[in-house]
Image (cartoon, rainbow, N blue to C red; front, side, top):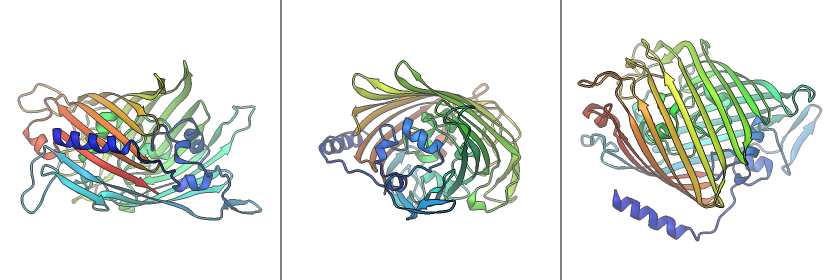
Length: 446
């Protein structure tokens, strides 16, 4: 571990003097703006302008050529982008049996094999509509233990301007969506608290989401996953509302949706003594079918959970800083998708016997603004699982350290270390999941 940290520190120190190259992926091509125009410190974190661009349904254009006609204004090029990840991961889970290896042995991953390889496409459809689609393969090592390793998603944002006399700058409409990995919040989300799996300060999830579950309470209880539905959205510069009806299947399973589950998100954005701040609530309810790896192919499961979260992004001592907090809980049930033990052999078969919950704090500082960041996170969690010899709800606490370096606006190298402790981490869970995870990751988007 010490050697890995020293090795990474040496690389990052050497790269401090490397030149920065502007990025031109999907939306940068459409708007003519560098990636840093929409992202806070680094992608995928959103700043105020990034929120405005997304709130407008990805419709903003600049110097890019257009195809125009009666009722038609689209880019003259179909804008696309490619995302890849590569790196090394080591955990303390049980080592594999030859020739089958695990991250307990330490493992490298490359795009499409352990690492992500995704093609994004979309952009402006009309004055009031935009589209985003992702076709992916590979992904985090956790995907190897689930029913599918797909990463595909798609959504069509149809958002109309509301008359200014009602609320200036407000848009309202609907967003049909489907996703294999991001859950009901994929339809529409603007905060960087982990309310959606992608919107948090590290884009390195770790084996079985180990890192992601320390950064975000919502991700700890397991609100990401397959979801197909329609989000009804209203938003402006100060607030947004997302009311979604959905079910728990995604592109990989190719089934028609019967939206028995409901997701409600209400959040506000405001200036707090010069800080770009936001806070909100989330509520999941209802019951819908989920796909299983083995027979029966589908089983009905509850979608019951709630969360509150907040963020502050600003400057301290001349350095950009972000603070993020979240609390989430999922009650016990016969089968509650958001209260399952990730060590379960079959998805849907192992629901917690008590309420699963977490309170998470994280922060990130730009030690070299627009270049390098350092961050840390802490989780105080209850697993919802009863462990032999332990009374009640087993504790599951964790700390995380993360460092990122921006080789270019569209290339980020990162180091993430998570150490989980508590009654939950008996031998069985440590062997299956690993309580300590170290990841060196390179994300490239072009």
